[in-house]
Image (tube, rainbow over all chains, first blue to last red; front, side, top):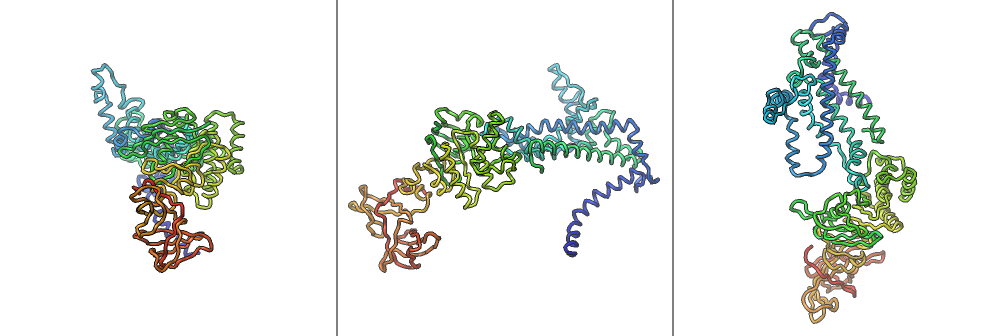
Amino acid sequence: MTTSRATLWILLVPGVGYLVLFFGLPLVLALLTSLGMGTIGTNDGFTLRHYAELFSDSVYRDGIRYSLYISVVPTLVSLAVALPLAVALQSTFPGKKLFLTLYKVPLVVPGIVAAFIVMILFDRGGEMSRLLKPLGLSLPKLVRDDWSLGVIIALAWKSIPFMTLIIGGALASIPVARSLGASRLTVFWQIELPLSLPGITAAVLLVFVGSTGAFAVPSLLGPIYPKPLSVWMYEAAYQKNDWGLATAMGIVMSAIACAVLLAYYRVTHGLRRATGGEVR
Amino acid sequence: MADVQIVGLRKAFGPTVAVDDFTLSVADGEFVALLGPSGCGKTTVMRMISGITDADQGQVILSGQRIDALMPERRNIGLVFQSYALFPHMSVARNVAFGLRMRRWPAADIAAKVAQTLALVDLSGHADRLPRELSGGQQQRVALARAIAIEPPLLLLDEPLSNLDAKLREQLRDDLKALQRRLGITTIHVTHDQSEAMALADRVVVMNAGAIVEIGTPRDLYQTPRTRFSAEFLGHTNVIPARVQSGRMITDWGQFVGVAPTGAGTVQLSVRPEDLGLTAADQGAGEVTEVTFLGPEVEHRVTIGGLTLRSRSSGKDAVVHAKGTRVVLAFPSDLHLLAEWGGA
């Protein structure tokens, strides 16, 4: 009995140890630093000063709001494109093989390169406006614009293939549904969508979390103000050497991501219940 | 009346012709089995009838109406797959009700029909279960119930019993047959299992390499197959060549086996192992090379005139010859000649 328990602990060490060492420990250290008890930066005892500063300064409040904006909107845009795309890719069409290769290209393009692509294409005086000029058309402002359209385009462009891949893998086609009298659309709503909900959940969460911490894309394509928390975090740590504030921002960002994950799980869980789906 | 006319159906996948010139007519209430080895195109035929796969050429006419251009959901055909293909996120009752909901039946009628259909397949107590909570046999009965609930004029079954173990398969086979006879529903059943085809079908369509080899009742196909392919696919057979000499058929080892119905040349006899008798004889032309006890039967393998033949005798009183025994063969009085004996 005791030996088997000892064996169990030993077997758990690599996996759990890894998590503790490379995920748990940094998180705890960051939390301590943000509470003024850190090993990096100043250490002047327990304080909620950094959090107070974060939530009282409108610059940072706008930062939190903006961070949420540039994670929620690109995720929704990606979902709106990826879901129909994944369904369409179920059927065969000429040139499908080529398309299946090409649509995955953004997966291997780094975020900063994607940002530059969007900048070159859509900035004032960029390729698109040059092409459209002879036609008497002009693009709205897409780079450093108030709505951060450029940021949304770049982030969505990056995550659409990723989402399509995951959702496509989760889509289950049951051809018998058609023979029972269901139209293509009904099959999607009543069979494919509920069955692929776990895959959609996973894809949405991963894209959301990825966008929350996006740094290169919003700093290149985003407006001068507001800036996302990720950019403020960089400035606090490296320009003001205020590690307490930087780690507090990191903790808040992580907390937001966790909160959104939990909320999303609750919603999809309820949805699956409503459609009578099994919970995976 | 729900008869089916299938005319010149063809399907190619790239350069591979899966089905070519498939023509078949199925009478109202008839049970037809498409029988063939895997890859012979039988499933493709079924998918084309149901509309899951588009045919390149040909027509499908159900009760006098062409349905081959219709979307699958407008064809009104009941489908059952080997993999059950149940909706995993719906209860048994909702699975069965699905087709009726699509047809916008009133809720009360749906409930009544679902209850009636589940009773028919003996699953009344399982209406609220999820498919994964059922055994394989029960799942397949749900799939069957879902298919017949919509009262389709035509039922297509694609290897519906192949995922089940032997005992259950036999039981479900009997249930399926009884149900089909009771409902009088025209049925096309795809299978690679010859005993299943023979037990279930009024007529069996033997397929090979995308084409129909032969069509007949199970009895005709078994006892008087036209082709060597169907003779060998439906159970075991001994194909024995014989010369015709002045109206008499003589085997290679010089045994007179019967009077030839046709002129001269060579004929191929198809003799089932159970019709081929053995008698021990010191000077016999054959030699027993293997004896296998199969339970209900004893099988002897005999080499004779360069051929290896099987002979089976059944029952407790079956004579068992030891390996190495010299034997003579006893042919049945009613010999069957193959009309086509090329190929397999």
